[in-house]
Length: 297
Image 1: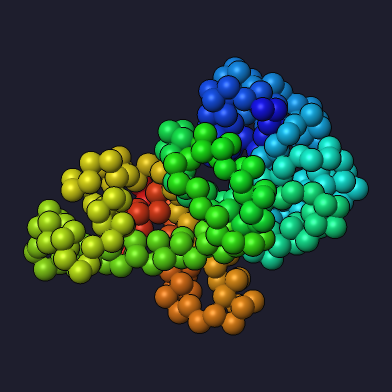
Image 2: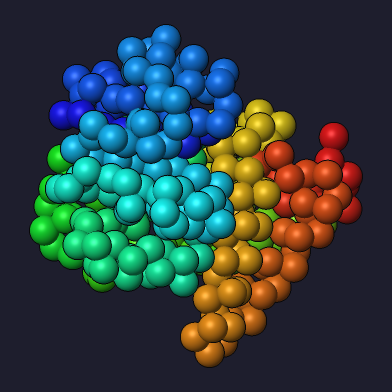
């Protein structure tokens, strides 16, 4: 299949390479020439622009930093909706605000284009390994077309409902993750003060009512979960800056919808402090260091 891929950052680059490995003809574009060159070295073709990368494609995938970039690429006289070939399926895998996603869905309906919002979870490790989780919003027919391609980049593909529901699922999930990670970190910090060993708390809580993913899969202290970033000085699998972005998106959605999310608001405030301390590039589980009163190294 001919696929256009726009946005080759830490997530998009490995995703595009996995499509090449799966045998697809992938034409890529990114504002970074080095990122394009890396993808070309892996077997992709380089495009001169977003429109150029998309013009021959049966499916176009975008992985962009924020809603403003998604609007820029899709909307307007020179956007993908105006210049794309008829029948092309457009899939945006960026994590953005729900409002922008639904705005692009509405614009796509006006020109009878097939569009899906399909943000991902799984971090850079999942992007490289092809084990991402996709949360997809859009109609059933477009989802059915997209699923075989998404399965080349991920292992869990969920249809979350109509337009924008992929983004809704992503920000709700990551708000829960941010809250649970802070709670897990607080439990370990308290255990330290009380003289309870990390391993003892882990052994008990991992089989008791405190069990959660932040504890058993991504433990914020070294030792109990060897694959967790805590064992690598909090080298990021998912940065604190990206967690803060998602928490802010959740708060924007909560304000717009009238939802009450006090713990989500507190988590956003704490991650804002952590990022401001210079820790934005560290893993989000490293917030345990701030709770201990330590400055990022």
